[in-house]
Length: 181
Image (cartoon, rainbow, N blue to C red; front, side, top):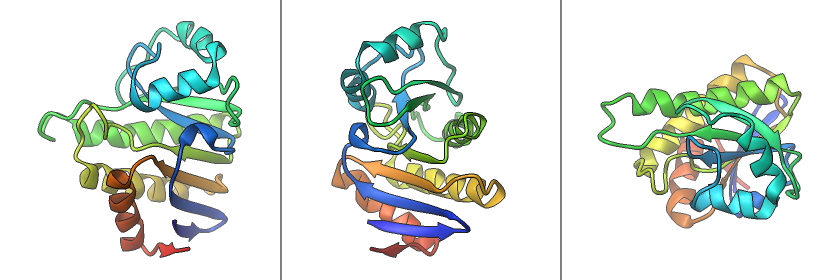
């Protein structure tokens, strides 16, 4: 685990299963329909149960770079913040800005709902094909900048399922002053 303290907030990178997180909210790397899918999205819907899907059906989908919130259903987390990451083409079609917006909008939704602890997956790094080192840099620098300007959070955790994402996310956090715990 690598962590960085910013004011009262700790930013962490851990390896694990986001569906087991006990943070106030977890973030779902969703598709635009919000009706479930593969990867993290499918795992969250399976673990959280039908209540999440029922609430998602009422949200009318979600645009890339935006975020919407539902209950956590049967998950340990009380809420799921659903965000839609960009499909990576070549990095020249707005992908970095859209990915940045996923993190900003997710954190804004968390603030609006009084959420103090949140866990993120590696948004867009699975089937959406975002290069992991680039995604890690965008994710962690965006969250760090947001936390510095908005001293609302106690914990922002990046939960990486595999070592392919864990290593690069740790390296970026270390480059910003994070330390191994």
